[in-house]
Image (tube, rainbow, N blue to C red):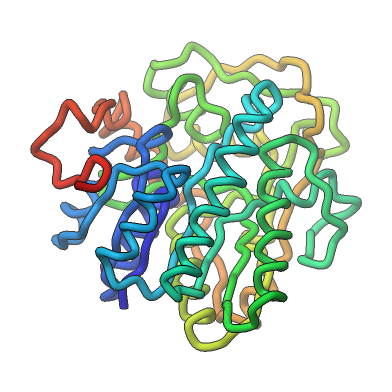
Length: 353
């Protein structure tokens, strides 16, 4: 069985590729490397000892996306590709809507043209907006607070309409919470461009000396220490959730939204303390103004994922911190390689020839 992984060189995508290969799947990776590095592809191969085809293509390129399907016998798609910075989306809304929504339309049209109707979509807890209570279940009211979140919500609605139009489709909408951690090998992990938007890479970059101190956005929330509480999930647990979803969609038809989280929340300062305990490094921080739209608490109820797919998160917060720190220590400047065109030895197709 061959799986097309869009955005397969990215943080969650690369870890999912490892799990797919180690489970015996064949994969084809499609990535434009705007938010990822080609070196991650080589490291996936190093971890697994397996080869696979990789295309350097943008999903907006309809002709080349269609050609990927024509050149490969694809059975299912796991769709990660998309712009993902909440703050940036506020300033570049049209760019986000065009890239994320139009790119997904191009992908689905190519799938339809090639009779591939199994899809796992990388959605997000941002579709819940400011939840009225926690933990969050899949039937909560939806209402994203920023353009990034709205692209996820729009795509979910598009995919629901797609299924209504053709009941042969089988689609999983995976709404995951806050992925952290890295592969045990330390070879792949989160490598954000510029100053990190997410808490854990911000902490690890302070620990490694790349950043001076951590900004804590607000300490006046109604939580135990005043800082925001989130449901952090190990990226490997998350990757395994995609394999469970793949099993589900290839054995039935329909469309289901599923939360992937641990159900346990940690505040920003609790995360700092857990990381300090593991790393033995003090993390200096300063409290700054809260970000507009940030919820005080956001945690998942993932009972549906266990009921429908037999999935649940297994890794605890200390392991998440240990693996994040191992990745950062081994790769203080991330993957370092920035342009696929500068590395002709990599077995990546730049476009279609």
